[in-house]
Image (spheres, rainbow, N blue to C red):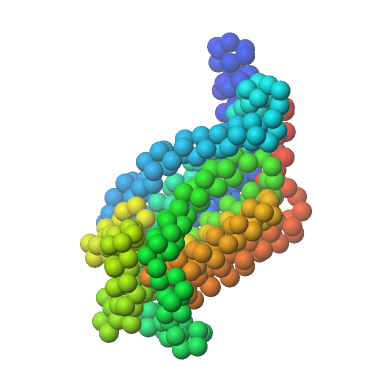
Length: 382
């Protein structure tokens, strides 16, 4: 790092040299203390590159799959965060000079070297990780065919008194307006997750909590979204007849959803068709890949609830209700067997507390999963 910083001693004005040294020192320190995140991403990328080489696909395009999405969404999410802070100043703090307070916060709290440097590893590496994850998810059937649907369906019925869970839900929520509402919440999940990811990337409020969130996030996607999903390869209720070749016990549910779609738009049906077409054509596209077990929708919703609970108990309670609705929606919309969500939730709790335990055992903020002081010290010294 010293050689990199020293190279900035070129013929530049002194204030530009100081500024450049400060930025380079902070960014390098940030990547150094968050090495664990880069290491996890590297493992995922290497696995995806191996799969791409095996199927003779272009790795460059596949591993940059989500880059355009993040380039579009990230400024929007940052704007939402800034707008939220402006509204907080106006309606909660209500100072005598709100604009002055807002501009001061932007300069001294939001757009600071420390905050941006801390966020950079997450901002740069998450799109790559998501692209690698999609490559591996889209390639599940290269290693294991969908052979678990029959077993998961049977286990679901055994756990729920001999009934498929959707049959128990249908008399309660089998109304097109409710179905559309659950569909909306199910799709909103992606945008909430993106917002929280950007918010936590820039967060300096609780560095240990931030690290615990990101470590749990990527370990869940890697270990359960890829590995367990391959070991327990299943397509889900909406594809049951297609992958088993047997009479489809979920046909009445899908018929209801098609009927509901005529009354109130159910976008899940179009997404399910898109995923099946991509699967048949062996295409790797945005959001691609079919995998029911475990439900990563439920896993991420539970992760958000754990994060919000540690941040604000009211938000945590709301997020917990949202997680329950995602579980219900995953079954009602034909995406998952109920047990897929149960395992997703249990996996999230297990990894969340395991990461927290490891962080507590480390005891030193800059070790392993708990980055802390080095960036601040580097900036202060720069």
